Amino acid sequence: MDIYAVLPLMRPEERRLIELYHGFYRSLLSGARPATTAEQLHFIDACNGSVSAETIHEKAFINFRKLVENEREKRRQETTELDRKKNRQIEDYAGSRNYPDRMARDLDQAADWAAKNGFRLPGMRKK
Image 1: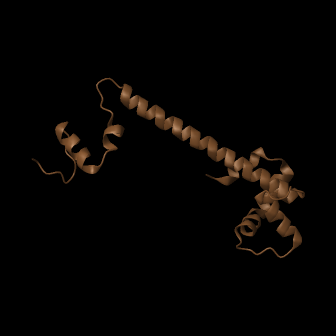
Image 2: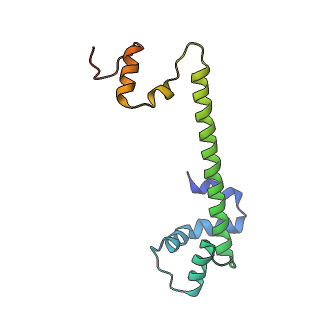
Image 3: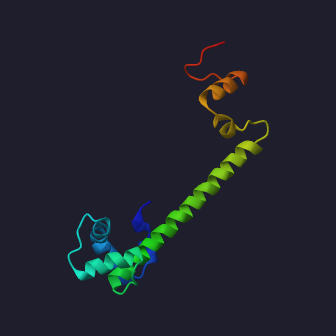
């Protein structure tokens, strides 16, 4: 997911901070950049939830992370719903077989099923 897709959802001053300092914030939180000031230590603690956010930097980045997580969850739900619809279409199509459920078995069972139902898989020997 493009994390910058959530920027239009943010207030302009927060969006500007994320655009300018996103790399710095992430490196600070990941430990790639060691915290050298009390403000940086407070930023890390605020982002981890152990203290409340006080500065605009802390508030902006926490808001940004919430928006990104919400967007990811929304996309996961959309993908799950699309998968359900696709499987339902396969099951509901008149005269079709439910291939996803059938093929979920191990390879030997799938090859036996394919042979019984008139399919030929690459590398399959005739019995």
